[in-house]
Length: 424
Ligand code: HAM
Image 1 (cartoon, rainbow, N blue to C red):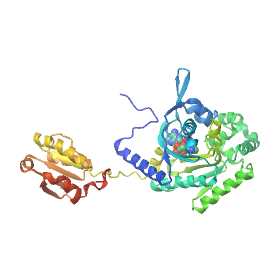
Image 2: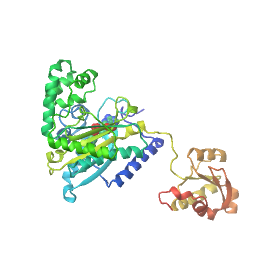
Image 3: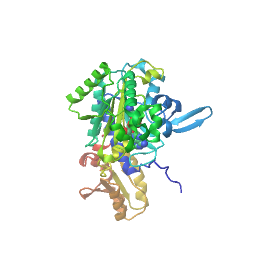
Image 4: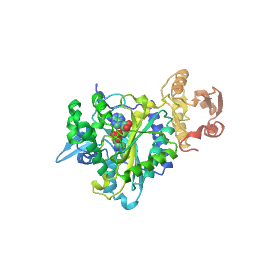
């Protein structure tokens, strides 16, 4: 028997309802904020990620799903930002608009050791704004992340905020770290010893307790920031304060990807355990230019949908449908049911049957399991008289009506169609 690959998941119909809820709620909010959807391929040139995320990042070093093909090497995308930057440049999107607000939903792939909230195939719900370095966008994006969480009913999260400054400041931060950490080098884990020489900022991402303790004592603050970057961060904080958005400044937050500069943030949730970030993001003002595009500021974030699910109240909800379930008793009734179902569905009414020859009692139980709101019973008696029995499954009320009146009755009397997509 075949099994799922560890770190992947089957999303079964019951749970898929909650996924749909997340997707619909976030699409609604992105619509209100005037974002448009972008869908990029799951496969990209591996080099795209090597160049943008950084050769010395965990993702590039250990976590990419690589697919060598002839001369090329493809990768299953580990994140969305690099692909969107590539798509922006390749499709000349800067020519269509100086300022673009894009959102995306889709699977990402990282070869990690699976644990709670850490998958090999997971899903991002994210956005990118390309075209400005203005701090107001940082504020709006962080606000937007909070609004999506509110829309999903998620509480108890915390924003952590930091600024890395510009490239010069980032170099200043690296020097500062070098200075503060070099005397403790022998106490770091073997990986951090390598990181110390290759890309010292990555030491701050290390989850090992011993390394974290040394880092915590390094006492880095924002002394490495130039006046412009200080002012930019000040504006971000002022804006967040004015909107009443609570956050904690974490000078050790550098994020695990190399493309970031200036504002970076993470959204932590205590309900998640060790993998405690619901989502994260930041500015990447050099990335598009470095990939061959125009000089332009950009910022975005992504939530991990699996992690949103872990902290959402997932009590099974109703299936969102006013399902009409038809029970046909006998062969002739089944034939009638075929036509009846076509007509109900044409009228925008969600209708179903299973054509099994079960007893009425068993069929009613089946309808209950499907959360049907109404049951239509067609038996031999009804066929002879040209009638149907209509049962309201919530109230238990049952009445006999003319077959020709069924659709109208459902539409008007019972207002069955109020929630159908057609809205008839
Ligand atoms: P990231 O922090 O690597 O950022 O991923 C964003 C979120 O994806 C994380 O906070 C977490 O919720 C979720 N996530 C990451 N890895 C896994 C995993 N293995 N299993 C389950 N969930 C996971 C980015 O990817 C950036 N592209 C975000 C961004 C957008 N920055 C600017 N724009």
